[in-house]
Length: 329
View 1 (cartoon, rainbow, N blue to C red):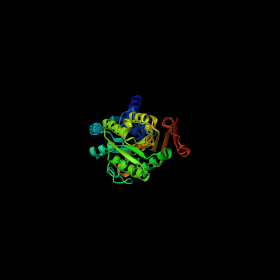
View 2: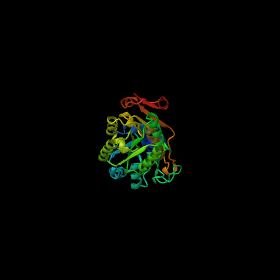
View 3: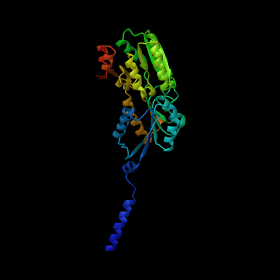
View 4: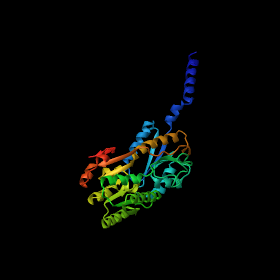
């Protein structure tokens, strides 16, 4: 009897070991791999990567436990995108996350099968990235930063702070199809306000320096920097130049205000990166990007730098201060 008992115990033990794990245990055992394609460097995009990782953690994804994030950084050199994307595809990532139009277009060109979650793309329909916001189709979905008349609203804010402003310089990336549209919209808005525009399309750090020379020659009264990761990468140099030459501006990124710019107005890019984690979660759970509508921003941030205003000899009107979501002292 004892032998039979032992045999029964062994049999039961083997049966338990051979039994399939509960569904939750199986899911926890799976290690997902996410590709994060950055436009600049880890240090410069820490304020965007952080919210994305926070969003993942809130949804139950912990790096090293059930998810691995493969980071690739272009360091402001968009020509590196094809090589970096090929590396991510070779690693068999489950999904790729990108920010901005150039990186998203590069992924679209490289693969039609790996799911892509885009963040802060200006006009995904106009640039051919998705078929429509409601039904994107293909392997791409995510969040757009597009908002009608955003460029005009920035100029209106600047006019409130500098009422006599009549001549502005606009720095934009000539290599980006979206920036071509944004520059045209900015010029149209400036014309309505009776402002002359010095249009400065650049592609590289060297061309940014050439743009500075043109500004020194033409002497505009303000500098507007449009939304492109090239300028995010070189923000300290650009804002140092603006400060030295007493050039106010309303920029697309709050990061430019943090390094000395006067104002920024636009959607919350950190918030959009956090929200991107929700898209990643849905895709990892089996949803198809084609069926996930692209989200447009619903809230906007106005960030003011009072120290910069003082250095420029400007007083921010109470009407503008009351609309600010953040004031840097």
